[in-house]
Image (tube, rainbow, N blue to C red; front, side):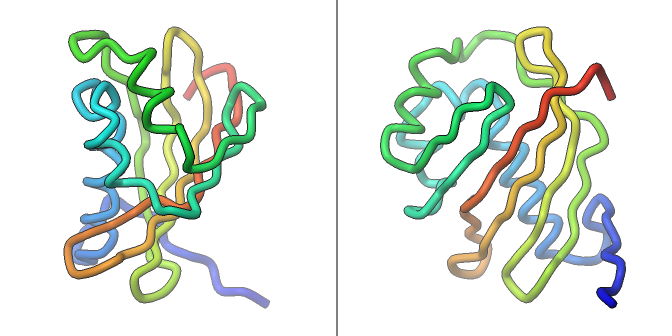
Length: 131
């Protein structure tokens, strides 16, 4: 039997706090509109199952996101963001987001590459009716 994981806002776990901050940064219009900035947050083996149903990998992802992001546009609205450390240097982040008027549940897996530096290696978005 697997133990339940505690999901929270980071609290006293600096790894969860850092991964949550990285996730929030990737949701900001300024980061999403800047392919070089966004790319630094994506692991070379990045993989995503998008809320649209598309499956994407690292190559070209930052450029595609930047192409459709207005840096002065409406930010992604994330609600209930929380995280849990699964192992040393491995954090799962969960939240519900409103993107372009549509709601979806999100889960990201973040790995620490060096102290204070995190990269997302997996993301999944699932459509939902709301938070």
